[in-house]
Image 1 (cartoon, rainbow, N blue to C red):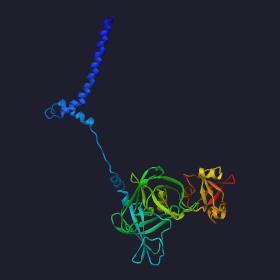
Image 2 (cartoon, rainbow, N blue to C red):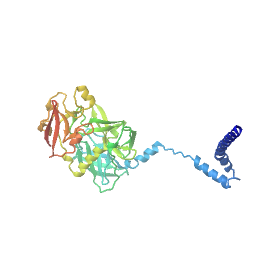
Image 3 (cartoon, rainbow, N blue to C red):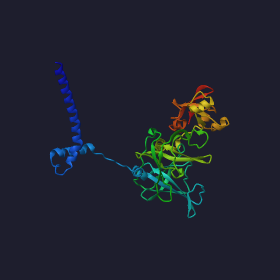
Image 4 (cartoon, rainbow, N blue to C red):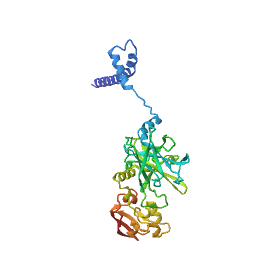
Length: 392
């Protein structure tokens, strides 16, 4: 009985080994021997070897796709680049200005980059000073090499955006605006500039390096309630050559418009978010750009680090401030804020129950109002909350 069991076990092990070795041999034969034999012309017509060759081709087929970055960038900007224009300003002899690119034929000439927002020729650009209406001639160079006269149609004091319209009745390419709230640190972007004597785009590649939520376009050491606050930052070489141009995401949409200002003799570059451009553009369309409200206060945006350093028990809000501590230098005389009784040292914490914070800074909240509107502004003064009624 014992001998019979041993024989049975031995036989079973023998069968297992045969199956195992046979399986390995089958795999080896199918993967290597059959494909090799199928490559022999004499045997390739037989169905066994033909199928083996087909199976091997499907299993082992690999495909390499090499994308040259310069080619991919060229494809990305091919459409938005056609919406980038060159705005040429020619000043009459009677107009004195220091901000010129060159002097041609005795006339002062300034060039800057702009972007077509609509297919009927509405152009936006960035400038820290309102463009001159009289004594100047505006021309626009398009991507196709043609140039057309243009007229100034508005200047937004909040965002420092200037708008021009082509005089000709044309259909032109327009740029697509991204939802800049979705932009994240590290997002790859392409800056496009065009401010040369002849139409010629230049680009700079980089990434969105920072969301500077406390940078205010006032170009001062303190923020101003009438200037946009909150921008993107990207290291752009020769930033002045790109001001007014778009920063493009790799999906071809404009993440923001490039701007700059000079502070302490240094040029500060930034990207104004596309949503700020969109909000400003909507006012242009509604023809109420001139109805921007003014609160008239200088302030410091509260952050966690600033609150800790100053011993303030609140890290969100707008601290009405002047370096001297005097209300007369922190609140503009006869402004809406002054008439409402605001003082230096007050912390504005809400506007019509909307909290003032880094995501919703004071100027952005105020941008929703127009001249003639009223708002309830909640402040903290000497540790006590109180509501002020503001008439814009």
